[in-house]
Image 1 (cartoon, rainbow, N blue to C red):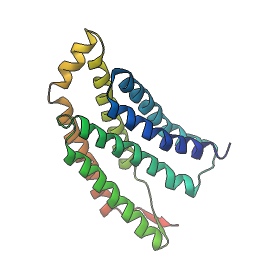
Image 2 (cartoon, helix red, strand yellow):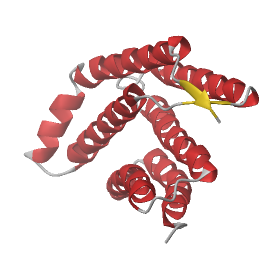
Image 3 (cartoon, rainbow, N blue to C red):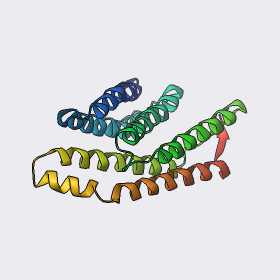
Image 4 (cartoon, helix red, strand yellow):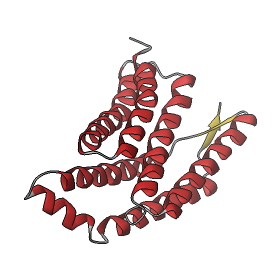
Length: 191
């Protein structure tokens, strides 16, 4: 049982290429599968952490793999959406998310090289929840637009508004703000 949280995290990493491939394909069936697999991967993010705490089996591997799995899933999905649907998710949003993650990863590495650990802040967990919620909403609307009316017309009408574009900006601002919080945080502890 002590390996279960890390196994779930690895499964999330392995699911990501399938999600991205299915999104790029863009057919109705592939979008539905991408949506379902993305939701499954998102739920696994909560489950693996909860299990590690419940079973009291936190590991350094898990502390490394869990944020990596999140970054691969989130940045990969944002990048494919920006490629396929740039009117919904602009490229600069992907850049902001990627730069923030690179910056925090660099900061975490710098702290570890000094024998300290950068504590994961609650705002980072909230940021991930906001990103996953945005992506699930976007994928849900993309799937809805492919379905027969009235669901299809409802999904299409929402995709034709600036709703997702505005929400993408909000996600980018929140993401950047959490990077700034990390940069000025003193939540460091000995490794």
